[in-house]
Image (cartoon, rainbow, N blue to C red; front, side):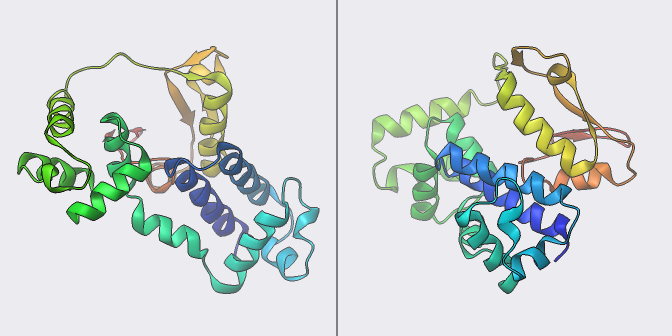
Length: 224
């Protein structure tokens, strides 16, 4: 496997751990490992095979184990399971509704749905009340929140360190330059942006694990 392939899977694992509300330090460690792997001058797969991958900065025994599984089998079993269970748009809608990632997954399983649109349809059809733990009061609260979904909401910025971590990961993956509020060193960042002159940057942007959905795009820009 090429370093970029390995880094992409490790970064996807970090993103899904965040969605699953795992220990934030664990997710951060995997994201930093992905950055290290992407910039490594030697083939990481070879370092894994020869038992030398922990020579790289930030690669501890836990991450080494995942890397060995990835190199030897072509994937990470836990990552594949998370991808089956956690549809990012559904988890994102659940968070808007006040549901944890775990609760969103439980609700999706109970209703046999997987996407945010299917959750909206289930709510419109009155199926929420048939899910365990959803009584009339909770159903009413969820329906009320869904009814307000299209209303404009106050923008909430990210702390600078959080914004740097997110935007920096996107920039590294696209060989791009950090821009927007992060580049201006604002304490609270709302305008998160990267700039790239790569011809396939927009296509690669849409495929990044950090991007839940692309809301708008044209020939020269995309908003995710």
